[in-house]
Image (tube, rainbow, N blue to C red; front, side, top):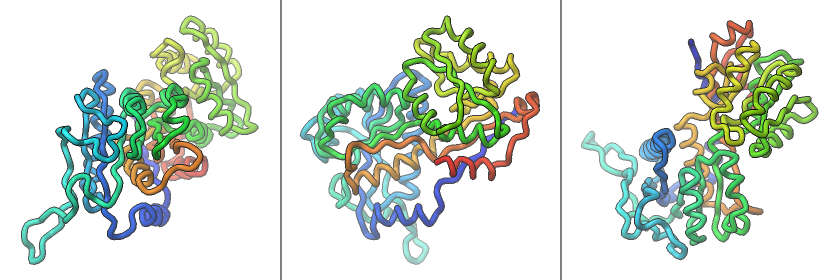
Length: 358
């Protein structure tokens, strides 16, 4: 089975450069990016490790003077505590990326760009909690004063944290970066591929209702077929009801209720009904979805770096910033498209539709 990946470019370069000039004026010295990571299942650990490595690489290649990445494992005996302020790394052994190297005059060996020692730069440090366990740990530890970015949360993991006192009444700048694309992008991807009159269906459970509400808001007056399965035992019956009215399925979450493999069950059912399914991961496309919009690790790292820099300069007004993952890559499965007799648009058309949706 073949599958293809199309990278959707970020916003126009002129806008990106303008934002960069606002975030880091010429001559400014950056602070440290302090990553607090978690170790969980092998899959989660691999995912977080890939993100951390991409962020370290980006800073090494593109970092401002003095900007470094420092990594603290969640199991460290000294995690940031209330009152630590910008000195949370005291006594912690860290790994760091040196400042970008520049060529010496006269063709001599490259040397590190000059910059302040750790913690002494004029820029503010930013803590980045990677994953839900690290996010809760940093929120529980207390406010402190260091800007905090909660990265790589799913929409539902964020929902579980949003009533935390440190988010309801933050005393320091906080932002949240979700690891998933907005349902609006998934909807736009389906509409870019399917006929204009295609009717889309969703199988959901009460625990992912915030995702359903985001989708309904994006859909506007467009009619969607939505079925709720309270348990894995109800999934087959609800799928049958949705299939009777819908031409294609949107899989908003791989998990429904206590069924961690609901996404795979939906894919198998869609295949049996010869109906396309749109998912939120590359793995789902490999497993039989027609297409998915999802960020790769580098795209997530780029967004986290930009959001962290912005957080170091500006304090969110009216509560923490919340961003869905963007830009994204589009994964398509030509074998499924051929079997279902669906013509896949080219990458430029898909890019245009997703930019418009955002």
